[in-house]
Length: 169
Image 1: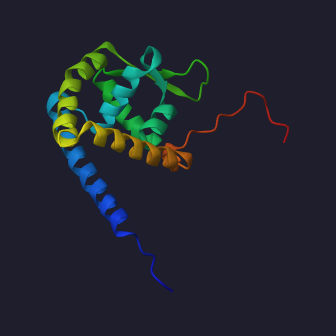
Image 2 (image 1 turned 90 degrees about the horizontal axis):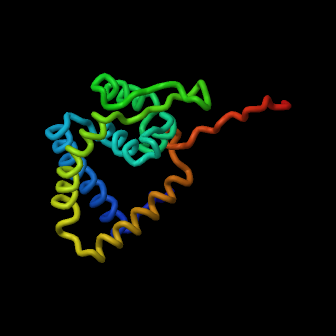
């Protein structure tokens, strides 16, 4: 049996992606801790809510979007709730679901942290790239993301909603 071989260019791209991802994550985590005492996941949660209609979303939808376990996201949302940055309540549409909403304090913290976040992205990731390279990177990573989202891991897969009517099984 022969061992699977990877094209050297693909291997180079893979290792570069892993290293860039690690270095970028380190810079972002440091900035978020210093500017707002936030983890990356907490920032993603606040930023997602900040962009959501009425600043609210179902917890399962948030977990699917940030590709984080539902239990882990529940824990992170609890920490944010203790700080007064979000509030959680049962969904008015489905008593099994929880809706999380960003508070004014959460929005204010997001506004405080965001400029430094953008500065880290520009300095660490985008500074050495031309606009054409940024566009190519966005296209390539977008295509890879879309492909991966077509068969996401369980933590990233949207939960099937149960129908309101009983099944005829």
